[in-house]
Image (cartoon, rainbow, N blue to C red; front, side, top):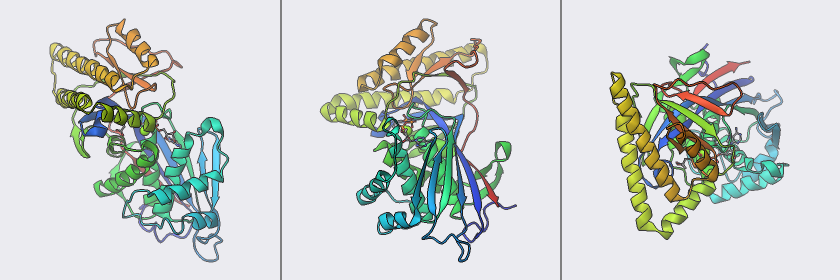
Length: 399
Ligand SMILES: Nc1ncnc2c1ncn2[C@@H]1O[C@H](COP(=O)(O)OP(=O)(O)O)[C@@H](O)[C@H]1O
Ligand SMILES: C[C@@](O)(CCOP(=O)(O)O)CC(=O)O
Ligand SMILES: [Mg+2]
């Protein structure tokens, strides 16, 4: 079966599933928003978006004006539904489907989307989902228009913890929507477990749409999260430019989730405000982070062949991570829960730094290869070996 050929013309039900990975940032978060280099790697935790499109043909009961756009957020246990006629009324003038031309969400479009969210009962305790819902409605209407369909989302990633759940959500959803719209086709490359991998041009389009979604959630994203979620691997990212990094030796990272919730948009805005209050000092901080990311990216690529070389490489990585953490403290994005993890791991001579936006969320600890490491089942730590290649992947079924 060619899973994509004919999707635009297809008149029966169509199901597309896409999954996109989260990420860790080894160096350069926040500074990357201000033009410094950063280093990130995709991890083996995914967000899955599945999309079921109802028939659109005349006589099949699913014209563009009837039915609804539904969203089922499995992890939150919440479902949302917008009648297509309501979407058309609210967005018809504002958004028309143009999957091949990614464009930002305008203030008028965002206001129309906010009115659509008012129709829904979002529990106060989960109000932070509004940003994700807005990104969903924008991507759906911009890529597929106001036609009926049902999206189901589930994720391995904790939300708002620094592992890029917002980007994985936007990437997997853009991939599913673009495939359903017939705007991208999967390549000949087969990924793991039967998943199909998109061609380079298709990945570029997914990435551009996901970036537009990330803007709704992050405010001012650098683009590193959606890029690493789309293209996978380990990357250096600077001012929108992406360089693949080849890691010859496995780099082992422990990820500790402090379980302190926070919001990337607010933290990114806080750093920008500090930068406008102290432009010279913060420019020096961003410059220092840039040097750290550049050095870290070249060390990652060194092929260490014996134990001495591996230890020396790991010592340098640890020192750079420690320096980066100090500069993140200067930016005002550390947190007492993060400091507790730093102190705790330091007792075992292990170096840690926050990853992602900080303010809580996850902390990375470099685990030297000489250390035997055991994590008991059910504990709050995850352990990653960074040499897996995870990218957005797709599956399509014609029912
Ligand atoms: N699976 C999901 N379903 C709905 N919204 C999501 C999902 N994953 C992420 N989001 C949105 O992204 C926000 C978290 O993004 P952010 O603050 O950038 O943290 P991070 O990207 O580190 O997880 C959530 O509050 C929500 O609005
Ligand atoms: C702080 C930042 O550098 C990374 C944010 O990552 P996350 O949303 O916390 O997973 C922001 C960005 O680059 O867009
Ligand atoms: Mg995010």
